[in-house]
Image 1 (cartoon, rainbow, N blue to C red):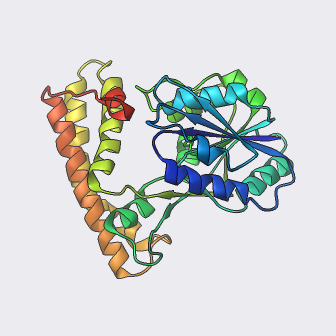
Image 2 (tube, one colour):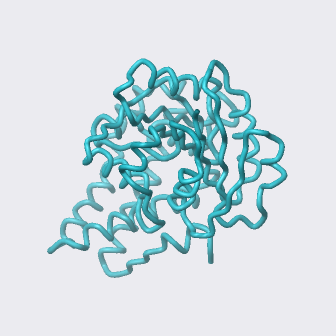
Length: 300
């Protein structure tokens, strides 16, 4: 059995679309259940979840996707735990690809798949859609070079999850930490390109900036534990500021963009976000450190 675990927070329309896609999965022979774990929404998605017989709704008041996923895993009945985010749309063969991988490679215990950007108007991406099509969710790179994958498209045998332990809380990049911890214990993550989910781009620049605020806060908290952290942090910030030029070949060669317009939009996006990141990092180095991770998650 496969247990699909979905942390949810104030995304009822996205959750409805995601559950519809999961309910319409093709080619999977194993039975599967869907566990939605609400993480403090203004209104529980009870009506949405009740449309589907496979869906169980749980409530986790502790903020953060990690605690939500942990509760789902603790309640799961499946031999395989499949993690997906509430705003992701699973491709029709998502579960079948997962099942097939584990059947073909019985020694594999942990797999991550491909995350692609969902375009509202296919073929005419917005700036953010073009940018994130190239630079967001580079799961193959994360898996093969760094040994972790994102929690929005992750499958793990349930006994391995219990061995590795729970995801950590909100003040850390919990899926990255969990993946690195699993790798350190000898459970190597494998990339499965057939296991595809589609993720919407951020709706506006402040949403993308908020994502980088969280990453910057995580990275800053880590580097400040070492001596002489400030000069290294400043150098990193300066490298971010000058980095857009190095991205021209990647944008030009990307198979996830079609046409000159989309590639130009992606370039505008990378320039804008790298400027934001670099300036924010320099501001933090000068002492204006704002660890906003928990506060920005879902509570004022």
